[in-house]
Amino acid sequence: MSNTKGMKLSVIIPVYNERATLHTVVQRVLAVPLELEVICVDDGSRDGSRDILAGLQAAHPQVKAFLQPHNMGKGAALRRGIQEATGDFVLIQDADLEYDPSDYPALLEPLLQGKADVVYGSRFLGSAPHRVLYFWHSVGNWILTLMSNCLTNINLSDMETCYKVFRREIIQAIPLEENRFGFEPEVTVKVAKRRLRIFEVGISYWGRTYEEGKKIGWKDGVRALWVLLKYSFKEPVVALQPNQSFEATPQTTKNAEELGSQVR
View 1 (tube, helix red, strand yellow):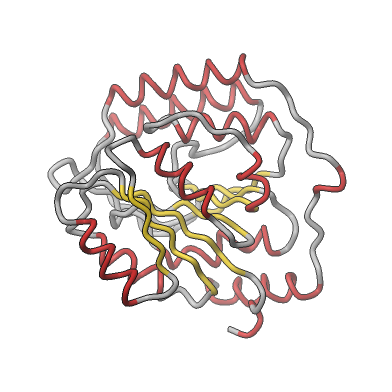
View 2: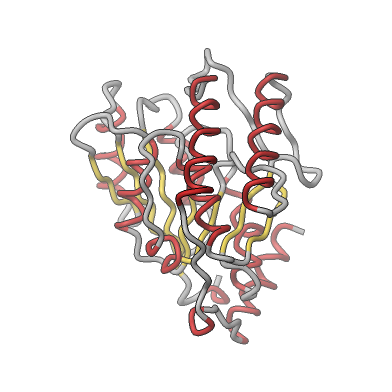
């Protein structure tokens, strides 16, 4: 894809006991026709995931593996990965198979066009396939997103989505503190407080059951509510400076048109 020459995407994958899906998801990420660095941060896995990462890193120069000294939580793993990123944009990818890397072109399009600073991939927009699973999870997600919108005065449809893409210099400038699943509400509040340009793009979703390895539970939902409230009152408003705005160039616009044609 010559039209994306010069643009690099950093994909951050937090890993914790994902032996069953890790190799497959990394292969799917590598299959996306973009210049990539795939940053896998293992959060103290004990199921052989670290051995799989070592093999992937040896086989693929795009893959970089970082090992946490012990289980510190998803948020801590993401902070480490974001710190190590060198691409133009940073995308969060779970190590399971719930989210499809073939959605990357659609997620990147608003960024490449210079219209967005942050893009959320919404599981509740568009006509892409969605696996039908837990009713009360959908209710909890709706409540969390509603609370987030009330506290931030933005109108997201899916605050808790994994797929979030940032301009690298922006996400690396945001101080992140949450160690577990509080990353999603924390980063949403802090992005909103900075008056950044946020877009949503519809994505597919292949949710998994607890028997298949899903980890998040009701306690994490309660924690997410607390995180939303905490940072809504604690975090000051930090306006984006005019000279920080990303300007679309003819090349990035051409890149966006090429990427967009792939998903249409």
